[in-house]
Length: 409
Image: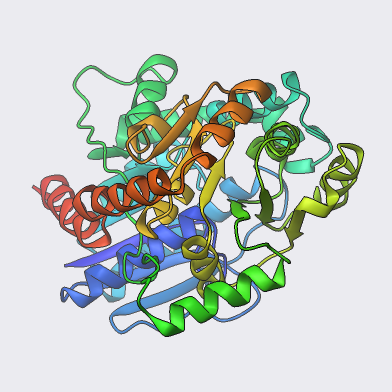
């Protein structure tokens, strides 16, 4: 089968979408299928995978409008690709590509049926930003992309509606995203819709082996780097430093939890909020117990996951959210919000949920989870089992192959 992926992110753009498209392409190619990824031009080189071809197309660097310019370029190259190497199915990754109804009709008429993955929605992104503002996150509306989402999400939602109406199969990445599409996007009653949660790389994100000399050395090395005492818990948060991710809430909650727990917080993420978050930590009097890393590669992050005692994910909005699964796959329990898709992956057997936007609720969850190392180990082991059972890359490949065949038939 020749599958054309239309994705606005692909390595070296390693966002959540880029990561999932890369892994899905890799698995499908390993199963003998041919994959062509049409993505945005970027600096740096894409990883070379046998059976996967990368086509980069131009796009206009304007917030939200890039989805239209990229979509137009992608369709043009898709038609050209199909003329040379016939495509069996087109896999569109929304909302970072915006096609009108006419463009969907052209694709279906001239190329192949479309499967649309919904990685979240623009209206949901706007909700997350509005929530972040209402709970006092720093600099919510200072980012041009966030400002564009605030004022233009409704306009660009119409292209998501086109995807819902003109795709052979629509694939939300969570039940929460499916509910969003049903309640606000006028999903037709007879649409073919199947929820497929994205999985994670269970060979990269693996638990710490307590009897491994190498793992013990790496863990001790990480703990020395942050000056941790023998009983100090290492708490970890991973995610872009943007208002929607809830790092302001995290710091305020950690300041309370730190009064009764011997712990150190490491935040890993790139973004424009680095200085503001450091200033907030200083204002709260916890600078000596917080380290903000501007970025790490995947191997370093995977080492941090398995060396940590607890991962905290306070995001105000996600289509699905991969960080909790990466932590669980690493054998580390997770504290995250009782909102949106996160409870579809996390419960009190693998971590804890807290009330969205509540400093008090998050502080109590951190304190409670940190109170028992034995409980942390037990929940970490259960998280690993859950990922292996429900959230693997092999499972993603099999599920999407079934969807592709359904779309073609």
